[in-house]
Length: 104
Image (cartoon, rainbow, N blue to C red; front, side):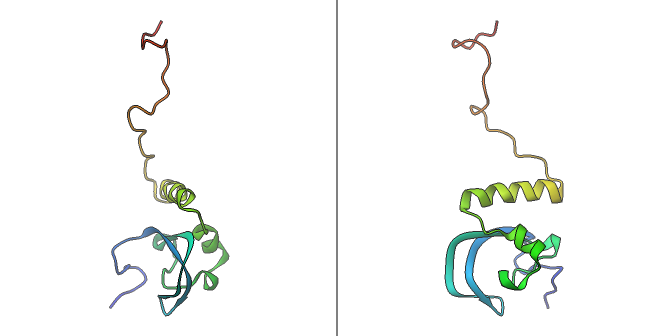
């Protein structure tokens, strides 16, 4: 038996392709080119269609383009779940100093 407190797949926050329509928790009519952010910890139910959820959950869900959805996922996780920001990969930081790498 599954409750809404225990997501079946073990996840609580996910970015997924937005189905055209959900019927009884199953996608019907294929998928759109948009993505939606679903957070079970906040009370959203992934089995409900976008049109059947509260406006607050609709604002969280999106829809998003893929890159904007990834950013929204990270922002939601940090703000709502207290996760630290993802560190910047080495080599992508802004460098200071002269062109030869010497600081002066």
